[in-house]
Length: 453
Picture (cartoon, one colour):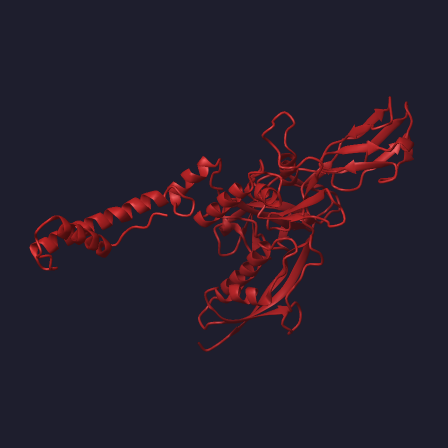
């Protein structure tokens, strides 16, 4: 390791050499010789520091800014750009005698903010349907688009028949551009994951990937059932509680007439969400008895006793994931035509799934400083708790002390307690119902009081 020398160390070396090689003995600090030696030493010390800085710019730990981008590019990485917050709001109408289309690009806003939210697709309210959940995305990328529940409350550009909107859950999946420390940590994980098949490689792949629609996982946890060797689940979330409403569609029906049975494989669209109907003609077949299915890859393997040559196997009634989950599954499995692709080891089933979501509802009792704008303080407190919850990995608990600490960082808050919703009791630490589950914000309500401060 290169350590720059101080001017004192350099003077000591110069004096020793000067005395050893000349007959001059006047090396006092105020002498002409002493002044010259110390001046030279200071110049050499400055050069040593600059050389050290140049050297550090070629390491992950020492580089920053553009230099760090260059080091990351040498590893095949680039800084992740900001992503926009997205989530669901409910639009409501009173007149239901005719169908109503909420067009793509309908615009909604929130009080006290210039950030707007646009629908990502056209949505139709059928005859008799008074309300419908629609997906919106923030007009700006980054955390500025995140907001607490009930913040989106303004109709800016939408059909006049829409009379109100409701935002039930927080939007907390907007992410700022990757910071130096985050990029440095990701580059280090990349180096540790070059073998590709180990747990750190799978989680690194998930956290580094951006889907074609710009969404990306903000948490990724590898779950390995101890009683099911050879199978693992990569549980991901985008911070919004992805598992509550993942992107999916109906899979295409498949009909295959068998010309053999032993080892017969039937391919369907993938990754399969859950339920699937497999029939021999019109007779239902039973999973794990008549057939097995690899849902990640869409491969059905028939048991010898389940069918005979000439039978027709019909597969339908199933859904497949789309978007981030499907694209990440494809990345993990790799392309058979590209030997450099894929992260899954031979003989292993690695299934990408949206982590099951457990919503957490809390009341946050805060004492606000006199002169604070209560609506602003409450909104920021709710957003801060939502942001804390959105960053938790699968199986990770929410600690009351950590939430209080985050709330106390909000400007205008002088004291805070986190309460069980609807009570005056402080909430205990909250643990997810299983090691596969993520905690995410449900109904968060900030309750304020005023002090004379």
